[in-house]
Length: 136
Image (cartoon, rainbow, N blue to C red; front, side, top):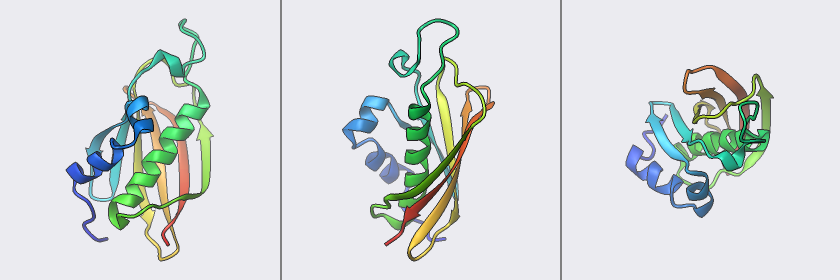
């Protein structure tokens, strides 16, 4: 795989989006073929403020999509629209930050694939996903 964008360059692109700023996304880790994005706790994203509340599945889906996108974008340095996204929810995401680690599985000429694992801060898996992104 090519070197791609640096950590600083990728973080600048990620945080340039007003939507990502609203969500509070931060680039947490930057590996050879993977990245980790943090979604900070925000009570607005949860079903209720009490102890039984859990984060809405749409927020987890967004986190998975964005993490997969930027794992691929990092190497191609161009928009990589989502073609397909599969998500399995494993347990409720309770109050606290979530981390999405996206690993590039394949960089292709027409499509690329990333696997994404979402964990809580105790590293318990909350959801897993696989994204197919356009490489054209």
